[in-house]
Every structure is written in C-alpha cells, then in structure tokens.
Image (cartoon, rainbow, N blue to C red):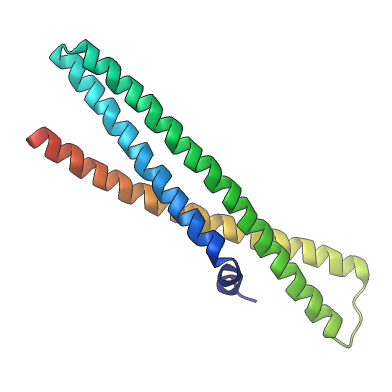
Length: 150
C-alpha cells in the first residue's frame, strides 16, 4: 500500500487540513503586515492608530493560531486514520499468507512500519505547511511593497 492510497482514503480530512493551514498562513502574514503598519504609525507619530494596529495584530494572531490548532487536530486525525488503514492492510496480508510468522516478529514489524507511515504523513504535512507559508509570505511581501510604493 502506497502513501498515496492512504491519502486517498482520508482525502476529505486532508483537504480540510490544507484549507485550515492556508487560512492560518494568511492570517499569520496579515498579522505580520499589521505589525509593520504599527511601526509605520509610530514613525508617523500617530500613536492612537498604532494602538489599533497592535490590537489588530493580536486579534489576527489569535485567529491564526485558532486555525492552526484546528489544523493540528485534523492532521493528527489523518495520521491516526492513515496508520490504522496501513495496519489493517498489513494484518490482512499476513493473515492471507500460508507461512506463519512468529507473533512477536509480526507485532514488531507492524509497529515499526506504522511509525514509518506516521512519520511519512507528518513529513508530507510539513512540506505542505512550508509551501503554504512561503506562498503567503511572498504575497504579503508583494502587498507590503505595493503599500510602501503608493
């Protein structure tokens, strides 16, 4: 069983994870931009507006981390379901084989393979996370550049 097949079985949760992570990345970049606006307001001497920018920054970070928390819950669910699916698949293969494997050897192999599958799923999610944050940061830098140029 390939990792792609595992993701296909839990694709609804994977899509939720990607959307939640994308929203969290957007809000994190927006919070960083509001911090830049805070500094700009301080330099301009507009202290009341600077206070609003700090409050906006705080609110955006709270929203971003809320989405990040929901994302981590969904990601753990995908890891759990993927590992469970893999273990069921391996168990079925071993039950269908004619040769008997010692039970301890089977359990050891199953746990080791299950951990590798879980680590592979985590790696894929980390890759998706990095890509989404880089894209969001790039868009944020473009917005910041256009805002300063205007």
